[in-house]
Amino acid sequence: MVYSYAPLEGITTWWYRQVFARHFGGIDRFYTFFLTPRYGAVMGRDLRELEIEHNAGLAVIPQMMTNNSELARAFVTEIGEKGYREVNLNLGCPMQTVVGKQRASWFLGHPEELDSFLSGLFEDVKLPISIKTRIGFDDASIFPKLMGIFNRYPLSELIVHPRLRSDFYKGSVDMKAFDIAYSCSACPVAYNGDLFTPDSIASFRDRYPKVEHIMLGRGLICNPALAREAEGGERLRLDEFVHFHSDMQDTMREVMKGGDIYLDRMKEFWWYWCRLFEDGERLVKDVKKARKSADYNRAVDRLFANARLRERPYFL
Ligand SMILES: Cc1cc2nc3c(=O)[nH]c(=O)nc-3n(C[C@H](O)[C@H](O)[C@H](O)COP(=O)(O)O)c2cc1C
Image (cartoon, rainbow, N blue to C red):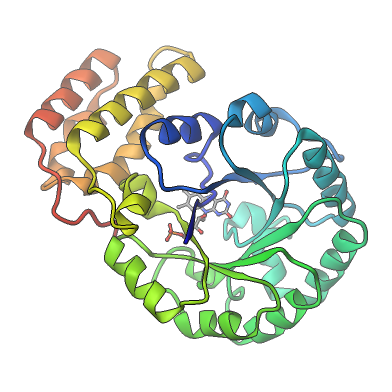
């Protein structure tokens, strides 16, 4: 099984990937969060994500989000020149700011525009293109039609997160819709969504033996050993998590500079990590209150001294 780290804006930055890989194995590929081609060039923070030294030693697939096929082609060419071997197209992002600009999941409610965008993109594209999609905008009955469109293009892979745009991350995944992709996709199908424990990954694999790639998101932020555990490896240990946390803190402080600003970002991670511990919500309260590094360190030390890892970390 190939396990990949899902693209997660605000989480899976270049330095996070490096810290993660220093402490945990089990992940074969990492996707960048969505990068936005502008006038054919890679700019700003997107550039930092793609610097080859920042991704040294890792298989990284840049993800792009655009509705302009000419910009998309130029972006793919530039990515290829930097040495990357594949680009992933984001057709899933549900955020209103994105949908309002007719990007990502907007296309799922506009099949003609999707077809014409893909036709422009595949006219002359320099790298293999995979797609990460949801199953529709606000109605899953469109999914067979979307599959018909995807099947007309030489995608390297179709990664399906079986929710509608209108679901955001609520409710349960629609496995009936995933069955459609599984049975009729012309290219390999990968799965993404709500796999938070080794058991749920095992059940998924029993039900869909032809799927060779599972993309993990929130479950992996919470439990960085999830892929290892899913392959029968050792359960997450507190001591390795403590080292991982300390490396994250040092790296983030160095990358973000600006005094204690990095603490806000650490706290975003704690929203996921508190699920690792018995009574985690309570234990993490002082960590979330800390505004200075010294208070943060004291709160974290106290937490680690009292924490017990849950028998089964879970996300939802
Ligand atoms: C905070 C956050 C940021 C995300 N950013 C991206 C993104 O940049 N590109 C993308 O394709 N999906 C993005 N997603 C969606 C995830 O990649 C993934 O599809 C979703 O979390 C479902 O998988 P999971 O249940 O394993 O978490 C994001 C999700 C979250 C929660």
